[in-house]
Image (cartoon, rainbow, N blue to C red):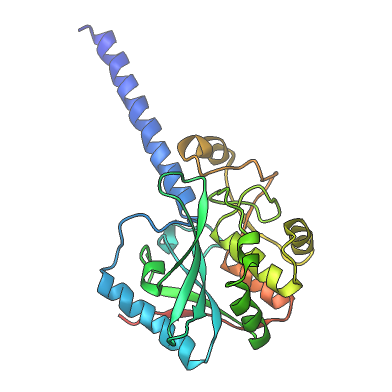
Length: 266
């Protein structure tokens, strides 16, 4: 083999490694934004997750909360962009036995572009936890009652858009992720409608979605690396729903009782 051939092969191998390495980087960066999934390897053992889940339940029970919004981080904070503290949110709804059921949106494992509504346990909700804390939003009692009933009504399914996008724009109705479902569910209960067009238009003058700083390179290559990175619903800026957006909606409608971060005891 000639020296020139070796050089060409060497550059070719290096290019392949660089492409796959950058692809992995892009996937990691975007996955740290908003990920509505329960698939993956847990960081903490099940017993630890059960303990953390019980700490949330104890917190809510002590405050006599019927319905709360809880968020957890599926990526370590150093991998999260500015303005994003948590990646996945769910409703914690008090059950008949005094515990809490968790109402989530998860995208499918076989078809990651479709999502379903799932009710599971606090430990299941925390399964992909990467940071030892959780964000907690407690609406006022009237809004807790509205959401408590809403989640067990056909209306809950009516605000669900099954077409999934990792960082969907809440002001576009074509796709949805977990936090956007939360936003529309809260809005539907407050404004007593499941008309998603009306909800979008009202949200547009009520809240400012979280803007993600995404470089042109990431916007170009991201969808090629991960099919969940649909960016057709974004204009010049990339907008999505976060814990902060949910807080903003409850504040804007004067329905927020408490908003805080619960640090788990080891």
